Image (cartoon, rainbow, N blue to C red):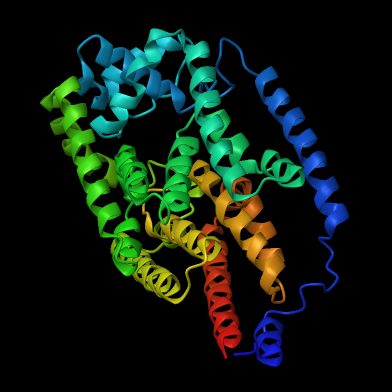
Length: 412
């Protein structure tokens, strides 16, 4: 049957005119990222220039969180993996890497990630830090290039503050983001491989909480089964290599990690979660958990509806990644490195389906979020992460509706 152009145009028109002029035009998209990269390079060099003995003025090390990865590896290689969960023991190991260190960095990770970092202490600290960042960044960039390939997009990625924050922290967000992105990209064409990538997220299982929801929504049973098997084998291997005491120490340490989150020992200004936002407002722990659970349930319901409504990889991927960030109660500014993927997917979809008013401004806010999260919270005591993430999820939901209506119009 012949396509109904008027219905299709109406569906597209609800999202605004694709060709409408906007302040963030092609010229600015080519220019601004290069300027931002220059500013980030200068800022990073300025930060590094203040360090003495590989520590900053606060006594924290070059690579920050990476020092605990290296220390956990150092202890495991000496047959003391379970002791990594002891603050005094790991502080001594961290001082082996950076003798001038004055701050203690706790180890909260499961044996799966301990297995991943096991070889790190085979290299000196600085070489190990650089190798880890470069290797995980390469995987992250490779996944991003599967989403969008043009040169301007790579400049936007290079200017994304999340990359710089994760690299300076020596954290694992490049790795976890690459696993999430690879799973989403392979879900339709290589379901078993997608399951492998999801299973490997056992290194940070709280970032895999939304996968069962969308796999059930799409009846991706092979992927779900593969993920469960891989995660189980991964944990078993980590326990076998590091010893059962390491697993018991991890489980025992979860209560300390929860207490650290609830009481602000882990800084709320760096946590873009609903829980942290409510706690920063002075609310009690129970109310903060209730608010977080309510928003998480709403986000899960939304992503389930999106995945049932549309088969667009870009829309599904955007909704999923944003929901993942909203659901996890244990999330930091460096974890927002994942936002590069939904921002790319939403931009591609917006170019096809059009934009509503202020949607592109929300994308710009999300692009700045890794930097704005601690900065705004420290300055005014308010956590801006959840409102921005909720706005992104609302955009993904709207895009899924417009996409579904456009397809329905084409079949009439």
